[in-house]
Image (tube, rainbow, N blue to C red; front, side):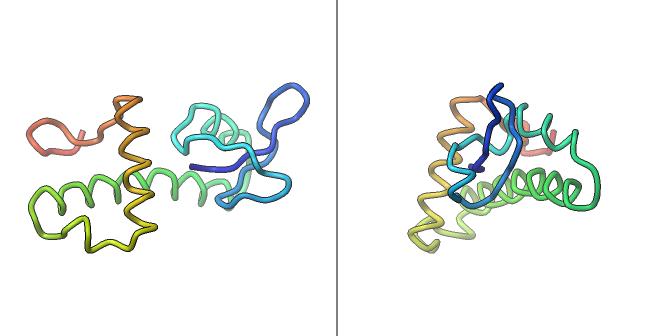
Length: 107
C-alpha cells in the first residue's frame, strides 16, 4: 500500500511509502495510476521507486513459496509482517494477481 496526494483534477501529484499530512490517501502499489505517475517522473528516484515496487512482488512470491514448502512458518514472522502479508494476499486475491504459474514457474 502506498500513500498519495491528488490535485484538484484527481491526478496523483505526490507518492510516499509512509503516510504524511500531504499524502494520506491510499492506493495499491501495483495500481495503473501509480505506474502512470512514475512513468511521468524523471531521474534516479523514479527508477528506484519503480524497481522497489516490482521487487516487492518478487519478495511476496518468494515468501509464499517458503511458506508452502514449510521452510518458514507464518507465525515466525513478526505480527506487523503477518498483517502486511495478509493485507497483500487479500489485495492480490481481489485483483487475481499472481506471478507464479500453476506449476511453480515464474510467469
